Each structure stands twice: as structure tokens, then as C-alpha cells.
Image (cartoon, rainbow, N blue to C red; front, side):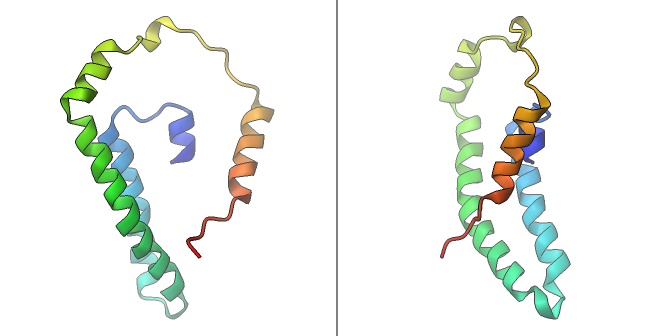
Length: 105
């Protein structure tokens, strides 16, 4: 999901939210039947509850008049030419993200 965001692959909020939900559902499906999967499924269910609320709010905003107005006022990316970042910068960011420990404890 992170690389798809960074590389601009998502063409809609719906595609992004679907991928986020799919990661959780895949975790629940894979670890749900495993004896040692309890911790993973607990975390997945916790993330599903928290992230689900945020994704629902994002979807509601995306369908709102405010979002439509923002899209109307947005600068066209077709007219903006950005230099591709150096691979070392992107790899550094990804390494930093991998080192972050996500926990609610």
C-alpha cells in the first residue's frame, strides 16, 4: 500500500480503501485458523475497528461537496513535472518506515 501511494498508483479513494481493508481481511483469513495466529487476529481486528472508522470518514469526505470543490480547484498534475527522487532517498524512507514499531500498548 505504501509503495502504491508513493508511486501514485491509486486512481481513487475507493481503490486505496479497498486495499487497506483487503490487508486486514487477508490477515484474518490466513491466521484465523492457526493456533499461533491469535495475536495476529487480535491486532487485525483492532486495526479493522480503528482503521475502518477512518476509512469510512475518508470515503464520506471523498463523496462530499467539499471534496468535489477541492478537485475542481486542484492543480492539474499533468502540467507539473517533478524530478524523480533518487533511489537512495526512497530506500531510506522505506527503511525508516520498516523500523517503526506500530503498537497501541
